[in-house]
Image 1 (cartoon, rainbow over the protein chains, first blue to last red):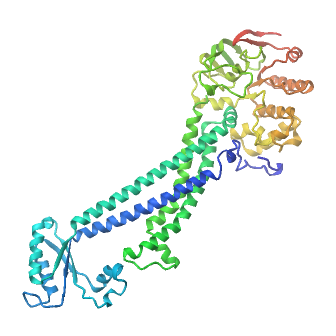
Image 2: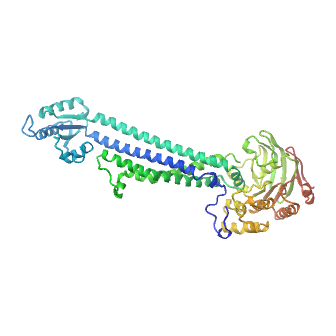
Image 3: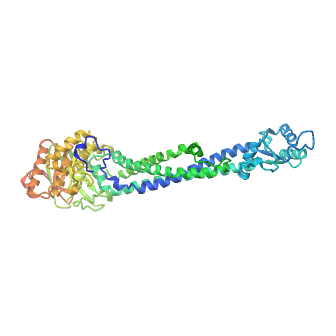
Amino acid sequence: MIRPRGRRLLRPAGFDELGLRRAISDRMLPFLVAAMGFLAALALSGWVGAAALANSWQAGAASALTVQVPQPGDPAAQGGGTRVAAVLATLRAAPSVAAAQPLSAGELATLLRPWLGAGADRLAIPLPAVIAVRLASGGADSDADIGALAGRLDALAPGTLTEQHAGWMRRLSVLARSLQACAGVTLLLVACVAVAVVAVATRAGLAARRDAIEIVHGLGATDGYIAGRFAVRATLLAAVGGLAGAMVAAPVLLALANLAAPLAGAAPRPTMPADILTALPARLWLALPGLPLIAAAIGCLTAQITVRRWLRRLP
Amino acid sequence: MVRLESVGLRYDRPWDRAPDHPGDRAKPGAEALHGLSFELPGGAFRWLLGPSGAGKTSLLRLLYLAVRPTSGRLSILDTEVTTARRRVLPRLRRRIGVVFQEFRLLPHLSAFDNVALPLRIAGRPEGQIRADVSEMLHWVGLAGRLDVPPASLSGGEQQRVAIARAVIARPSLLLADEPTGNLDDPQAERLMHLFKELNRLGTTVVVATHNEPLVARHPAPVLRLDQGRLVKADLAW
């Protein structure tokens, strides 16, 4: 490193006595870490998405019954009220039912939007009344009880459908948890590969600069001094790679969120900045800036450990 | 100061041998040094003589802590090297200056940065480093070559940079391996005067050389090695 004489008042910040700027390339390592960062961002979004699905499905499984009453406004077969009122009264009176709540027209429209579009309530399609039923804990699992209740409801308002979701909700929930676990394992694997990439780059640097390391070691440099030089370089390159990976991943995740929005019951996202901010879950927005930090930590620790282990061969 | 008791050295591991030491011809598993015993008092000057392959470089490597003895006891600057913990050695190395036959300068650093390296490793303030290194390079006649990398210096100039680096931290023990190999006679004489001056100021100096006329011109006690054994010690030339 050649500098003009007059400016050497402080220890040069970039003093590179081991020549690591050439030994650990500033192209390959950041590129590989960027690729790892991109994959980590995808896995992270999968993990967050699967967690959200699992939570919503678990919440859904609590309202374990859906009752559909066709022609809800017609008079009931028994009693004086409408079909839906009779069904609702019977449900609320049943001991195994904790709560029964008919969906409003708006909620029904939201439910149907993915299939019928935003104007489902204005279409000339006879829509049934839908009652969300939450079963009381205890006897809720008894299929016989639910069967008997369904029979009574059908007698009150013929054509009434009683659907029990607990079983498949539970299966969906297990599926979502499994997806979440897969995403977690992927994250772990990506981190392991990042560690391996930094370790290989560090070992290549050690091999390329063996002479310089031996000279500096011979002049009285401690293991910490030498490992610190490698760690600074690896931290910088890994952080740059992590930042690049996160920056490439952000628009991809936004695009995916945009594609998934209608399926989640929301309107497709316009391009307003405020909407872009809410397009991704808050946890992802927190995790994306964390990627360069985690990459930097992986770079720093891996380089430190690799170099210190290698240095043990010197006396 | 320096004490060896029945010191032996065997190169068992391939990385213990320094490939850039042409004088070090020991094969893996071969015993490079056998049963060396001698003592150097503080402020001593010794010539280290012997034919190629006699073990001069191996002995110097022991003394500058590039290897530890495989048998016997070695004490340097009042530290028992044989049993010392590894983390003690860096501080000890900072008190030892070494001039290598092949200089061992860092090619990507300027002459100034090469000489400044021991002080930076020791964590000295940069202001002091600047003054000391400039003065040292001026002293060895390289005042106008501070920012030049080693590749642009002549062999003699590189040698002087290597010497400046070895003595910049005022070492208690100075070791030199064929330091005059790349110097003409006037330069070699100048170097000897530098070594003697440092020795007069209290530095213990050991110089390995084949240059018998130089030894004849500067009589001092001799350590003579042959086939890894000490055949002559502490006798006046």
